Amino acid sequence: MGFINLKELAEIGEQVALGQPVPPAEPSRTAPDSGPPRDSGVPIALRGLGKAYGARTVLSSIDLGIAAGEFIAIVGRSGCGKSTLLRLLAGLETPSEGSIALDGQALRDTHDELRLMFQDARLLPWKSVADNVALGLPGSARKRREAALAALADVGLADRADEWPARLSGGQRQRVALARALVHKPRLLLLDEPLGALDALTRIEMHALIERLWREQGFTALLVTHDVSEAIALADRVLLIEDGSTALDLRIALERPRDRTSAGFTVLEDRVLRRILQHPPQEETPPPAPAAAPFIQWRWAA
Amino acid sequence: MAHSNDTSRAGWPGRIGPWLVPAAILASWQIAAQTGWLSTRILPAPSAVLAALWALASSGELLTHLQASFARAAIGFAIGSGIGFFFGLINGCWRVAENLFDTTLQMVRNVPHLALIPLVILWFGIDEGGKLFLVALGVFFPVYLNTFHGIRSVDAALVEMGRSYGLSGWALFRHVILPGALPNILVGVRYSLGFMWLTLIVAETIAASSGIGYMAMNAREFLQTDVVVLAILLYAVLGKLADVAARLLERRLLRWNNAYAGA
Image (cartoon, rainbow over all chains, first blue to last red):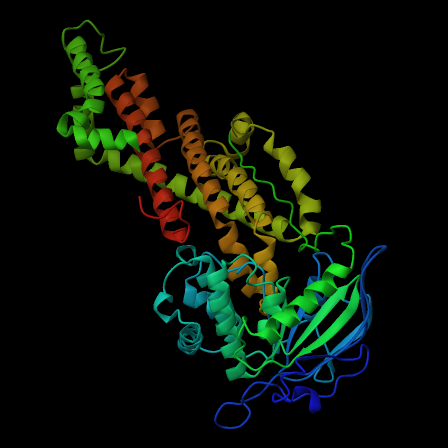
């Protein structure tokens, strides 16, 4: 495993040959005290994956192997198809071509192995924080609440369990959403720009939180972001998607937790940014929204 | 906001102020009736209305009529809003049902339900059935329309979230769709409570053998204007009570919503 040797800090990033299956890499996290954590992440294989809406091709022939427990960041200009890739993985969209396999098995419509964190927290405003976290959990009411409280404690919000989501700040709501995703013990966590709307300080806190929980729980993580520094701070590999296919697959071999001011970090950040900017911006195409119900705010007044 | 601050700072003159005009009207009404300037055949003195209230209440007659009206209102409301809720639900959830039923229901909605009274009397006579039918019909549409649009306007992002978190069918409906539609449904309930009393008043004054409307019409035949005024006031009080109940329901069920919290 030459390319993840942490001693070779001079060799800070190495481009993996595109299309070539990636050998199952040892995750670069430091394993917690007693060996690998329970039920670690799920490996993912994408074969010739493509998605088109009518005549417009959003993604085409994506071949990608992701090792169990790896943290992948997907960057790219807006409208490049990175969110679509995530929605395909989440089963919210069906691929037009190619296949997705989790742990060798085809992705089914409903699956308990993965959880998605959305751009907005999407908490149910009519449920308390704890009930939001317990949403969809099996078992008795008491067990579900216990699990929810434990997950809330993990994100540092145990004391807000019985409040309405409306009383929380944006960062706290995303932490609740994170707890809600992780309470299911997913083997794959998909993050769709979950920190995009947060202020810079809250984002840095969230990075540390996500990184810590990822190290403790060992799930595979896929983060879509347009913040290159966020991608480099968190990911084992940074993928750049351009015109619907992967244009760069960069392994980040910096030691964790990563120091954003270190020379290695800034060199990598600069390199990815330059690579993104090389490419002329394509026409803005908004990411596909969920099929919106006709919203008629109309009441009958006699 | 500024208004309420002003009144609280002004102390008791501020609190009493709004009631001065109604009190003056009542007082002059009483004086006009007592001096004979206002004929009791046109309007009885407020004291006479109070006396009528006391007399009818102590004889137990008032309670009987109140019970009859209340039962009609409640049963008619339960039937009409139940059916309205049902159709709002299935039409909101399934396109097929909307395609099948919505046009028909919208056509029926354009018929003023009180215009059916002659037909209803022919169908049901002056029995309970006709009044329940009218109340149910009047209550149906506000509940139907608001349930339907409430369900259609549930945040699609939340539904998508629910699905991706493993909810489907009944669980998705119970945790996401119904609570999301509830604010609209309760608006429908409040509208329909207004229609409930309106329909009942008309139905009872036309054909009934009990109830507040019957009491008023009976009193009219004997020129008991005090009882007539009392019946009108009772309707107002009952309408207000229904509205207060609906508000309490809103505050309880929508306490998560900032717009309904506190106050």
